[in-house]
Length: 198
Image (cartoon, rainbow, N blue to C red):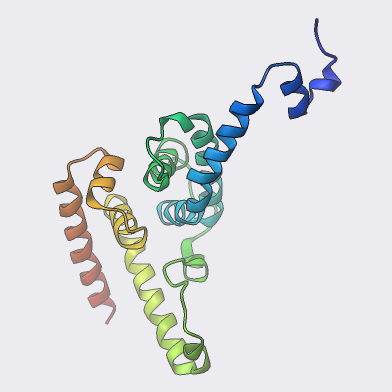
């Protein structure tokens, strides 16, 4: 017996009642997704934004990555989904979004930068300090954006997302020594780029 099409529509309850979805299993997956993915959405967006150099594409990358994370939820081993989700974001960017040109320039990075999210209220009171911080932030953002993508992603994952060398190595499918080498070269390039601006 077939249910009327209007009953099935997007009605999750109807699908459960008809036996197409096992409610306890659905609830278990939803709770696991909530626990593994949701706490790390800011980190996922931050990584996607630095990789894509465009906040709109970054939002699309994270949305697609979340769909993939839900689809492959059982592939996450353990109870910490941070590195797992960031690997999905990275792979989504490389497989789908990297081929697309940015819709905007990356000039808005300094406005949207999570790197500089924690601020002291006292600093906001002094215009000279505020200007100096903005200038420093812009210089560092420009230097980061100049890094080749393979170096930029390692810096973001290690310095901003605080992943271990092992986690980064697993994510990139390279030896830990390669991660350390890329990070060292990236830091040297950053120092050179910043010195060029002085």
